[in-house]
Length: 332
Image (cartoon, rainbow, N blue to C red; front, side):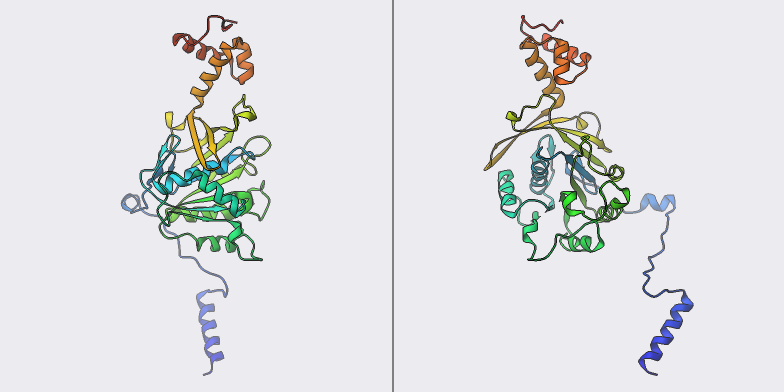
C-alpha cells in the first residue's frame, strides 16, 4: 500500500471513532467526591505583599490620567521583588515579578524605575521588565485580547514567576470594544489560566469620566482586589502627586486592612519618597486646620464634602486633644 492508502484507512478509523479533522477534543472534565476534594493537593496561596496581595490573586488598580497609577504599580513591583515594604504592606520574601509596560518610552521607563529603586535592589532575575521600545523594527506590541498575543507573553513568563503586572489594559488589550463584556472574555480566560499556574496578576487601568474603571463593569466580577485612586477632595495642584487609595473590592480584607489610604509621592526624579497615612487621619488633620482658620462646621463640611456628623466627630476629638484654637467658630 502507498501513503494515500494509509491516510484513507486512518481517516476511516477517525470517522468511526467520531473524530472530526481540525477539531481539538479536550480531556473530559470530572467533579470530585467531597472526600477526594478535601484531600486534593491544590496550589497553596502565599502572601506576596501582605495583607492585600497573595499568590493567585487577580487585582486591578484604576485611576484617571496623571494621578500616579504607574508610580504606585512600580513601587508595588519593587516591594514584591525585594521582599520589602511599601505603604502599610510588607512582602515576607522576595518573589519574581514580570512587569509589562505598554506605554512609556524606554528612556522614560528607565528613569521611572531608577526613581523608585529601593535601597536593597532586586536580585538578578527577580524584576524583569518589558517595554515596547524593545520590540524589533516593524513588530507590533502583542495584543492580549488574542490567543496569539497571549502565547507570546506566556513565553516571557518563567516557571518561577509569581506576579505579572500589566500596565496598562488599554495598551495591551486592543481588540474589541472596551465597554462590551464580550471583549473582556479572552483576557479573563487568560488571566484565569495564569491563576491556575499559581501566578498573581495586577492590571493597571484608566478610570472613566465618572471616576470608575473605564469600560465594562464585568471585569470586576472576576477580580479579588480592585483599587481606585483619586485626588483628595480639597486637592491643590501645588501639592503634587497626592492621591487617595480606596479598596472598592477586597475579598480577603477586613477592618483596618481595608482602610482607605492617602499617599503622597515626594522626592525628585532621582529618588522617590512616599508618605502614607489613613484617610481618616488625613481628614482629621484637614478639619482641625480649617477650624483653626476660622471656618464653621458647616463650611468645613462643604469644603471637604463631608457630612456634618463626621465633621462634628472630628471636632470633638480635636477639642479633647486641645488642638482647636479658642477663636475657632466650631460651634456654628
